[in-house]
Amino acid sequence: MTMEEMKNEAETTSMVSMTLYTVMYPVFHELERVNLSAAQTLRTAFIKVRTWRGGAAFYKGRDMERQSRLE
Image (tube, rainbow, N blue to C red; front, top):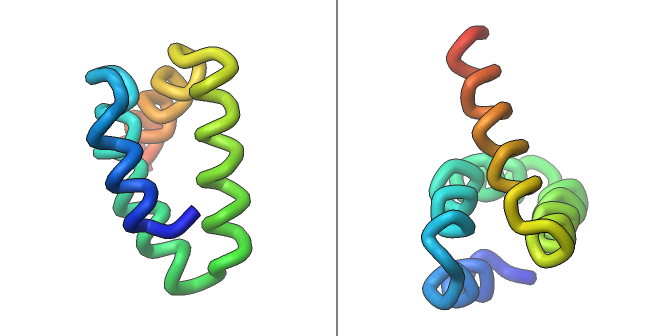
């Protein structure tokens, strides 16, 4: 999935999912420049978790954001 496809999918998702994309988009974008394979793997994992259990991805994103503030 490319960044453009990710943006298009984000437009059709719920507000909870939109929060995840807002927080994770810069991470995916930066990682894509450093390691494309890792970025695609991480993005795919988040999408799978979100579709399987929507709240889990949101909470993981929130926890990652909190962790980054502590560092």
